[in-house]
Length: 204
Image (cartoon, rainbow, N blue to C red; front, side, top):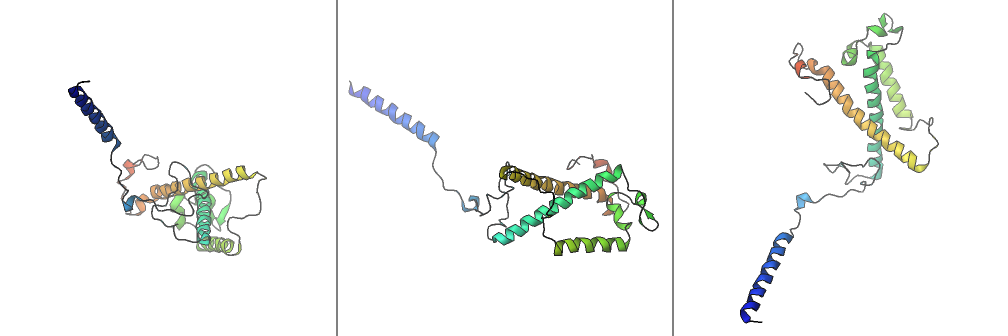
C-alpha cells in the first residue's frame, strides 16, 4: 500500500473520530442550585404524575414524621371542608330548606355565597364555632369510626389517594368561587371586572 494512501486513510479515520466526539459532548456537573433536595416523604401517599413530589420550598426536608402527619391531617380536613363548600355553593342555587334558620329569617331569605355572611345571626356564628371547635378538640381528626368499607389494602390505598386528589381540586375550586363571588366587595361599587369573567375557572 502506498505511503500516501495510508496517510489519507489515517486522516479520514481521525476525522471520523472527531465527528463522533462532537456529538458526544462534554460531561458537565450539575450546578448546586439544580440538585434536587431529597425528602424522606417522597414515597408518601399523594405523590402522583405529572407533578410527582411537589415541595418547591423544601418544607418537608427537615420535619419529623409527627409533623408530617399533622400536615397530612390538615390537608385531608381542609380538602373535606372544601368539598362541602363547593356543594354548598351549588345546591342553594336549586334547593332551599323549608322553614327558618332563626326567628324571622327564612332559609329562602339568605343569599347565596359570600353575601350570606352578613345575614347569619351572631348566635348562629357562635353555634358553628363551638361545634367545629368541639369536634377538633375532642374528636379524633379524620376518624369517624363509621362508614369504613371492607376493602383490600390496594383498593383502600386507591380510595385514600382519590380523596386527597378530590380535596386538592376542591380547595382550588373554593378559592376560585370565593374570588369570583367577592370580586366586587374589594372596592364597593366597582364592577369593571364583570365583563372579563367567563364563568370558567382561571379564564378571565
